[in-house]
Length: 141
Image 1 (cartoon, rainbow, N blue to C red):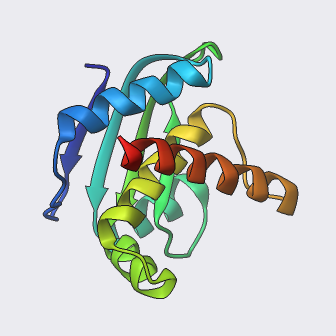
Image 2: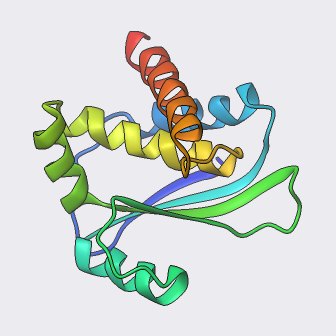
């Protein structure tokens, strides 16, 4: 499979990883974006903060950092780092389950690699719409 999961200093309770990997590949097909390889790394706030500072020059906690590693805009090869600490806190703040929030962030990173942005209000609204679309598709099956 083109999608892989790993953890750095955290435990991630995620059921049915094979189904999720296949769904992420389907997301890329639906978005008409090639996918060569995608590595998700689940980590702590501190680890993601280090990456955020080192590579993006942002001195803030975040739930996700996405890196596109391919020079070919038609084919994605990337790494997505997700803070499990942020996922847990955001789930409590948004009053959703940790599992639901984790999947939202997983799909959010994939959508970034498909070309969606969230810097402006209009971009953010479209990103939320796409996240909701894929969350509904994933959890209704």
